[in-house]
Amino acid sequence: MNQRRAATERKANEKTGRPGKNGDGPERHESIYHAISDAIIEHRLKPGARLREDALSEVFGVSRTGIRKILQRLALEQLVTLTPRRGASVTRPTADEAKDVFDARQMIECGLMPEVARRMTPEAAEELRDMARREREALKGGEQSTAIKLSAAFHGRLARLSGNATLADFVERLCSRSSLILAVYGNAGHLGCESHDHEDLLSFLEQGNGERAQAFMSRHLKAIEASLSIHEEEEETPDLYRIFSA
Amino acid sequence: MNQRRAATERKANEKTGRPGKNGDGPERHESIYHAISDAIIEHRLKPGARLREDALSEVFGVSRTGIRKILQRLALEQLVTLTPRRGASVTRPTADEAKDVFDARQMIECGLMPEVARRMTPEAAEELRDMARREREALKGGEQSTAIKLSAAFHGRLARLSGNATLADFVERLCSRSSLILAVYGNAGHLGCESHDHEDLLSFLEQGNGERAQAFMSRHLKAIEASLSIHEEEEETPDLYRIFSA
DNA sequence: CGACGGAAATGCGTATACAATAGTCGTCGT
DNA sequence: ACGACGACTATTGTATACGCATTTCCGTCG
Image (cartoon, rainbow over all chains, first blue to last red; front, side, top):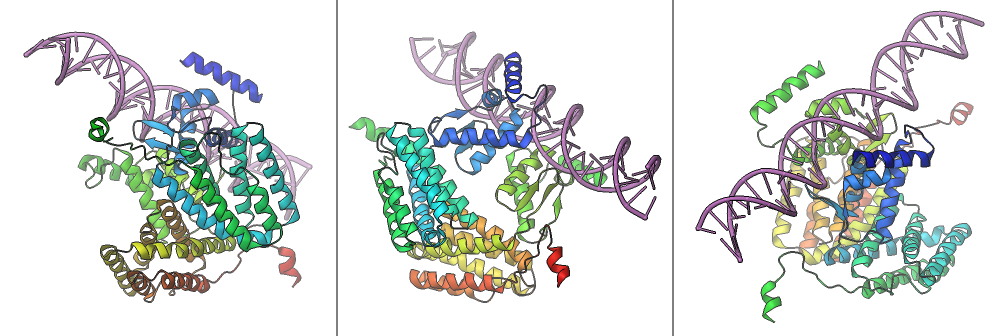
C-alpha cells in the first residue's frame, strides 16, 4: 500500500516537474477541488458514489489532510455528503431539495435579469453567445459532460454580470446542485437547457429588455424543472407492508 | 503566560470531564465554531482582528488541525479572511460587499415574505414574538451583543419558515455578514432593527398579508442600509497623489 | 545615514501516529 | 441448520511533529 502510494507520488512529481517536493500548495488544492467538483457536475461521479480519502489522496498524490479539507469544502457546498465515521459520498439530492433549489433559482436568477440587461455589453454578449454555441455543439456531438458544465457556466456567468458577487456565488452553487439533481431525476437524452433557450435569452438581454428576459428565464427554469421525473424513492423505512401486500 | 493558563485550563477540563459539552467528538468542534462565529457576530471580535491558530488552539484546548478546519469553514462563509502566509483575521467588509449583501437581502428576504405569510402558524408567531421582545429588551438594557445576535436569529428564523432550506441558509449567511457590516459602517448607538419593526412585521405576517409584509421588509432593510455611514476607507494603495495634490 | 543581507519568527501544508467506530466475517451454541 | 455473539479489519477523526516559504527585524557595510 505504501509502495503504491509512493509510486503514485513520484509520478505526480514527475508530471509537475517538481522532484522530491511539491511546493505548489494552495494551487494544487484548488486544481484538485475543481477536478472533483467538475467530475461531479459532469456526472462522471454519480450521486451516491463513495469518495474514500485514501483513494483520493493516492490518485492526486497529496496527503489525506489536504483531501479532507477539499471534501469539507465540497460538503459545505452540498456537492458531497459527509456522514460521520462513514466517509464522503456524492450527494443524492432529495425531491424536496430539488424543489428548493429550483425555487431559489427562480427567485434569484429571474430577479437578476433586469440588472443584467442593464449592464450587458457587446463583449459580454459575445462571450456568452460563444458559450451557448459551444454548449449546443457539445450536446449535438453527444458530449453530455461538456454540455452540462457549459450550461452551468452560462448561468453562472450571466449572474456574475449583474455585478453582485454574492448573488452570483449563490447562483453558481445552485447551478452545481442542479447538475446533481439532473443526474438523479433527469431523463436521459432530454437534458436541461437544450434547444435555443440560451441564445434567445441572450437576445432579450442584448436588447436591454429586462422584463422579457426575466419572463423568459422563468419559463426556461420551469421547463427544466418540469422535465424532471420526480419519483420519491423513499430512502428511509421503505413501506415493505405496502410493497409486498400488492 | 498564555501557555500556562491554557494548560491549566485544559487540565482542569480533562479532570472534570468537561461538564455540559463533551470534548471528545465533533461536537466540540461545532461548539468552538459557534463560539468564534458568535464572537464575530456579536462584535466581541472586531473586523480586522487577527486570529492566530496557535492562540486559538491554546484557548480552546484543541489542536491546530481542528482550528484550521474551523477557520476554513468561517472563511467560506466570509466571516474571516484567510490571506496566504498572513494568517486569518475577521473580515472587514468593503463598501461594495455591503451593497451586495443588502441588495441580496432585499431580493431574497422580501421575495420570501409571501410564502412565509402563507405558512405562518400561531406557534411560530409566538416564538418570533418572543425573540423580538427579547431583542428589544436587550437593546434597552444596553446588551448590544445579545441584541445583534437576536436580530440576526430573527431574520434567519423567519426565512426558515418559508420551508425553503436552501434560501434560509443563504439568508442566515447574509445576516451574519450584515452583522460584520454593521460593525464597520454602523453608527454606534443606532443599531439596525431597532424600534418595533420586527413586531410590526410579525403583525402583517400573522394576518397573512404577504404583500404588506414584503413591502415592510423592504423598507426595513432599506432603513438599516440607509443608517450606515459608508466611507470608503481605501485599504490598499491609498491614492497619495490625489490626497496630497489637493 | 541608508541599503543590503542574514537570522529569528510566523504561518502553512504534509506526513505520521494513534484512537475510535462501523462493517464484516467467523465461530459457537442451541 | 440457524441465529447470535465476538473478533477482525477497514476507514475515518484527531493530534503531534516536521519541513518549507515568507516576512520582519536587526546588524553590518558602503
